[in-house]
Length: 114
Image (cartoon, rainbow, N blue to C red):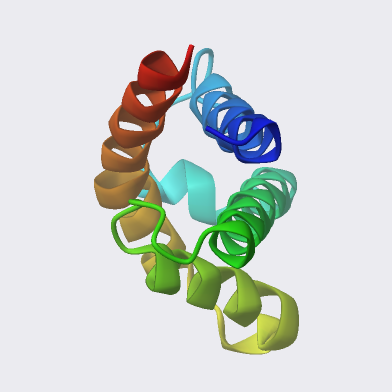
């Protein structure tokens, strides 16, 4: 695996670990998330990083096997360019449903490469 791709996979893993860390000492519930602007902005930033890393990976290797890569990049673009159209419910769904799956996928890709 290209070293740059491996570096970007680690960037994704670090961003996911950061998202997980935000809920170590606080409740992982929607009400807490939606009422905490600092938490929301931190998670949005991590999602931007994840989307940018996936974008760079696909520019390097358009066949790289990351499920939902285009949707991940699309979310990054939406957060950056259509920030006023982001709903707390959509981001919360990503945190709950998609981030755990991406974490497993990325960790597996890193394990295979190292």
